[in-house]
Length: 489
Image (cartoon, rainbow, N blue to C red; front, side):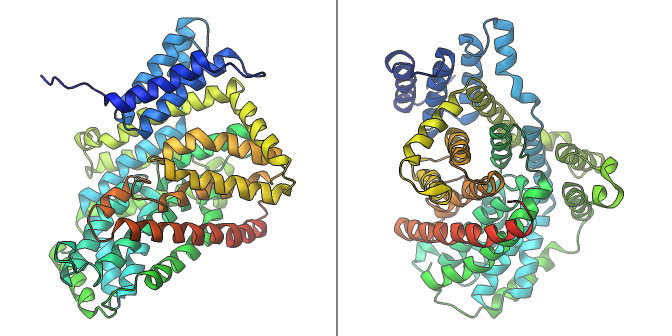
């Protein structure tokens, strides 16, 4: 039996201290109920514990659910309080991401992900930049059905990238990372935030963004899978086209021509042999998911044939189980999926009741009042809110914690200041993924790729800041025009 505690004492003490400070010391502001303020105290404590990694996020979520049920901040009757604490486990968006993560295990298990990567490199890998675009294109194709951006960028694409770098003897341990590895590692990483912004199912926190925006607008804006994908298509593709060029300019690889890479990829494909049964089934199910998520049956045959996005995910998982591509043991072993469902449910529950108890409206009013006197107009005020929201990610090691803590209030403040609801929703949604570019701890993918040693910390942060500016400009300018053409604002 381990004699270690289940939490890290220092970050846990800081988190508890912050919660107790807000609960008992800071006076409840005018216009805020004691219940809302006490829930905020617990919420701040949980977010601080997540940032400080006091416990695994799933374990913290169990504690959060217990505290909400025990303190009764949402309801006076204990039975009602525990129902409230567990209420978000019935949220379809949470299960959409959890099931999609289970489905993505099939891409890893069958080897389809690596095959896609090597295939594109075999076609475009005669130049270093061509390899970069191959990695980005592979990311794009896998993104719709890989909600774990860490699994996609770190588990599928990164090993392919390292194999290519090693074939040119570009090894951090030998000091030869500048040959080709540094550039490819950065492209490998910076493809990840862009593709994460392009589909609801491309990273786990995106449905949280959908949920928060829907609640802020009383469901006037409820972004569907198809609406999100269409909106992000043009700016996302533009960002993917520019990103390898920008990184090539900042950190040009020593090796520019790579004729051997295409041959290396062909050899890897030959080792894999013809597509096996599992890969073919996975590819077919991949196509079914995209067709249903995009709403194509409803477009062709009418609304009666529309299929809900979460139902679609369950169809995909059921087909994988029925065909034997995945077994139930495979699903049980997909710990990240069950972990995501758990922490997602806890954080969505707390954010939902902060909104219901009026705290988000109060805080957004404070933000609105602070910005309104600057006389910036809705465009300037919105720009200030987006920049403050995005670059606050330097202080976060979790996109989920960041989105949960800040998005609701910042979005509501923007609406109060006159920002067009759909335009501001899409910009904030894009910023919620773009902010992953900034640091080596910004999301789960970053420590995986940074930890391979191809870049220094300074190089990583410089590339991250430059790409954050480039990506934000693309989504604001190209995205803004595209969304106007689509009639979204």
